Image (cartoon, rainbow, N blue to C red):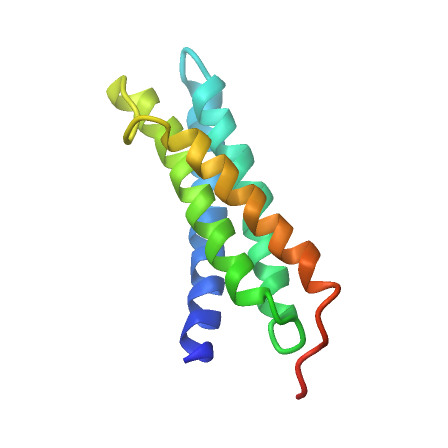
Length: 121
């Protein structure tokens, strides 16, 4: 079960990197770049983190949990900003803050992984 989730995390990292570049381009050509620039920053910050978690997966006990939380949190946060930019409303009430807290939980899972015994290879 771990292998498909690990592969999915790398796939999501690629999509997040792509989305980060696309939203950065949109921010540079739009009239009000704040929302798209924020979405771009979150995607471009968390895509490499997912790549690093993919690489650390065999030895880091919290890699799966951290990957899920970072991917979900980034999708909620950036998705809310992008929808606000294009549609004038967010995904749902409190979706950006929920995404932010979820990302924080993902980073906490990374930090806690430092104190758990490594997996045997």
